[in-house]
Image (cartoon, rainbow, N blue to C red; front, side, top):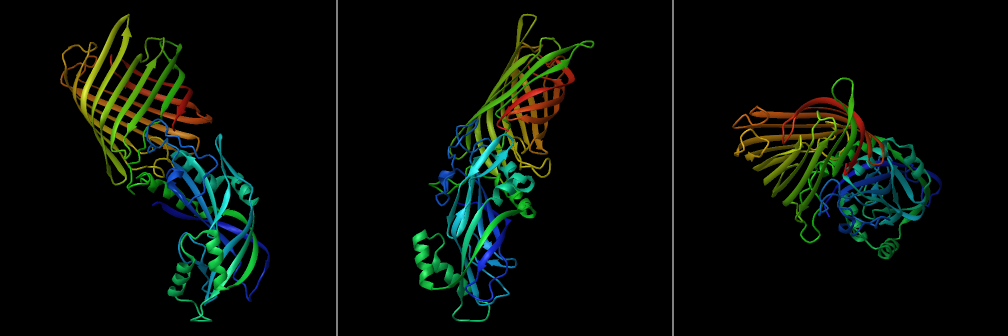
Length: 489
């Protein structure tokens, strides 16, 4: 299992330490390795299962999209004094330059840690605590991409997180190995490596205890509690941004599927819009998607649907659906898709049906995640989505019912400024060979909306939009505010 590890500091407050040697090491602190893994728990055999191990794939048949609950946050705690140096990442073995000739191995004798519960918005993640090779191991998950970002953000900002960790009580036995080849001076790297090899990288508890006893080290004990040092959390946030470039390896092949950051599963809003005079009318809008991928995320079939309606007759009144069938290719931290695409939209005006269709070839770029540049947290559409398509268009809504060429581009991007505040940008532009679009040979549409999460999946929405939409290319400009339901954020 390949993953990106970062380190956050978790201080240990020591009390009642009885030293079996003189002098004891410096006052201990605890270092927690936070492993943000884009992975199902089933692909992590060395990690204890979380209390909630069900995996949700969101609006996709494969767990490779941002709304899939495939992320876990793993917190490893090891006892390392200030100035101490870990002999190897992922182990508890360390040395202290001020005490040459010694190598220390902390072992957790007992851990009285109640289940740690951390609440994100309206969802609570609970972790039981286990030990592995002298490490404290806490597993939180599974989570979606946005929940993983919110979780790490909570480590930096939440007083409840501190309270949860302060409730822990841990007893350590720190084993002191003296280099027999060089007493009184710092052991060389070969002795550290020899010790690690004798202990093994992932020994079983019984095997671990037998190997330690055979070496007959000196030892001292300490009781510790945990506290988060928030100064190291930014590294964990950066790890999430880096991990969004690829999904986890397949258990059978060790290969990385393509990880997809797309639009939300469903966005549904109800809000008043201005009409003639001082009157207002209630507008309803929705956008939804469902995706079918192969196991590696390279081949796909994408279904999209959207619509708008208002009884005023001045707002958009339409339904549109599209189907894309094609293939993805990874390009660094971006994903490029090539597909054949078909779209159909319909409306009724004065009892008469109007429709429009298009059949095109399409190229779509899902760019690198912009969390930390536009907004601070990852989530749906935090990677910009830019598509260009070219092909034929026709329909009864056009002044000439015969098909003609169309060149069309779309853009979408969301900035997550905080765990509750979102800014959404969206644009569409198209041109054709004839003045078919309500008397013009081109048309455009743009929107800017700000969402504030009120409760669970419900947002308060403020939106401004202007331009034309398929199929009748009615022009509308105006603002609105109201409630919005957003799933797969």
